[in-house]
Length: 356
Image (cartoon, one colour):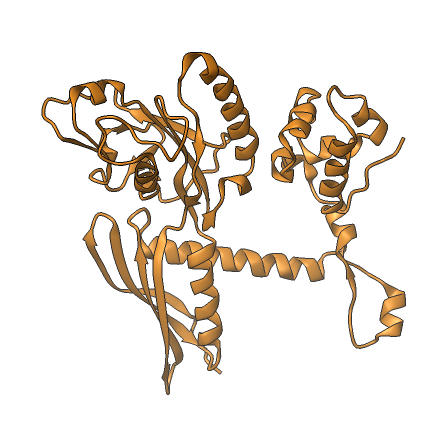
């Protein structure tokens, strides 16, 4: 039995450029056979569960189709959007923690004092005015302006959000409703003023580029796990490893709580039929959860249903659970289809819509 406590040690760090940070770390000692388990778990968390910041939408003055081109701009609209996806953001200051924002996204525009004297001019990430985040690589190209007339007409606005992994903008809480609403409002305006349309962009939030690990056995201490971590520069490899370990501990603590909490009800009849298995009624556990912290944006309802609930000041899952089918049907523009959506969304949380 290994008596020594496992510790995370820093072996080597190397930053080759602004957007590529490399770290080699070791973890151990652990008991024989545990190295592979720990390595796999931390690697998957590093690649999938660490939060990041990315571009989730953009609009360019006068553009109403992503397949169009702009006079005096070398890149097409699609190429500009692809360049925006490559922008890397980090929290402002020395803190590596990404704070949970109450807003689904943040606006950023070109600097108002930006002056262009020579052409062609390459617009980069450093030309953006971003109040809430820090640009990791200010030299990341966005578009090339070829003339003064194009410079006068080129107005760019991007929308920055937070998430994990690779996510479609439709999966981000609150973003589909607000983006759709903004899209339709501006599209109606475009019929008369010929302004811009907001285009959603599927975001890449992953701060980790690559993770490798190996397990080496020592005859005295036990097993050591060696990690190689490459990040995009928005987080240090050591901080990334610590964050992954915290996520893993949180998951295991939640699993342990489920089986030790008094709220885990065991079905006695099922135990008598299958004495070798323990059946846990998780629906009853979920019914006692704090639904005040779950916003209705997370239910992914249609724009019509979402707007009806929001106008009625139904903002959380707890508010919605108090309503009945009859009360919802009395809301303006709320029909049978919207009621079916709400009933299906509530069922995923073990809640049944009251009929009276």
